[in-house]
Length: 164
Image 1 (cartoon, rainbow, N blue to C red):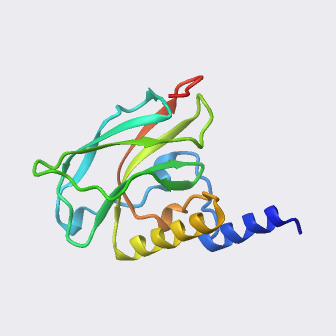
Image 2 (cartoon, one colour):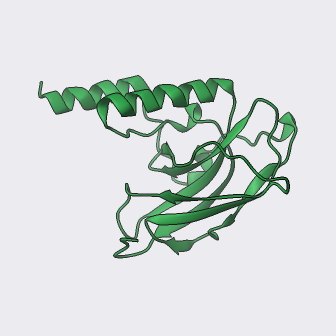
């Protein structure tokens, strides 16, 4: 077996099987964590269906983290999730912002920016994912059922000929 194919199979096996692809992206989303206390927060920028560049300024508002839960921004597409931010640490008003880079989609492609709540098990899964990425240099994505609970997702589209 060729080394690259073997490496890809190893990475995919470590991350688990790919979830079945559903027709509508919302069907990939776990239920909100409304019963765990705290305000789930919301993405206020970019707006839904916006054309974005490769570098995206993401703004979150009204986030009051539940105890033991961390929040991050992920990109969701093709039945997988990719972490894009460090853990979110909102200010006293619950606001937070960062700039992320999305290099894995082609210009014109649609994807979702998602605010994800991670409990202890999902944080451990994410640490294992980063270990695989660091060792093998491959970003295979995380199956949605192992990536945490989606608090909110915003569909966006990478602008044509986007290099910024």
